[in-house]
Length: 182
Image (tube, rainbow, N blue to C red; front, side, top):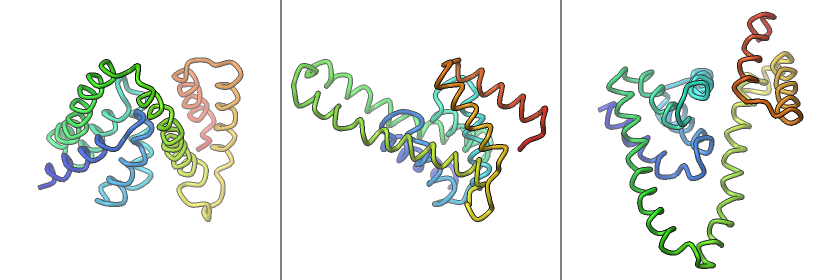
């Protein structure tokens, strides 16, 4: 039964996560933490962190890690399969439609209209992770000053010098280890 729940949850995520990996994070969080209570918010934040650091798309990595956490290797296969099936079908259909009708004004208008919604979905995922890191999931718990300072420094470094995000993540991890900040 758990395998069917994993497949169905990730089929829903695959169907409605328009805009890429980060847009799927609120949907995965909703299914894994709220609907099914498979994970705590802290476990979900850890999975997102690991998913971002490992090669491959963050949504598929997250699905795989959630599946492993919930039901081991078979759970990982079920969640990953559920995540991949809708995307494969949708991308194949959209590619056909786009290449056939890409010159039409209506198609260009739809694409322009989707951009703000996608940005909002990505911002929602970012704010959820920020809340987990800086406020430990609840502002009543107080501010984790070290996490806030590390966030601000990483943000400044990324905006001004534009290094690889991997270098910034690795540097943040090293700083945290060396100083025992968080």
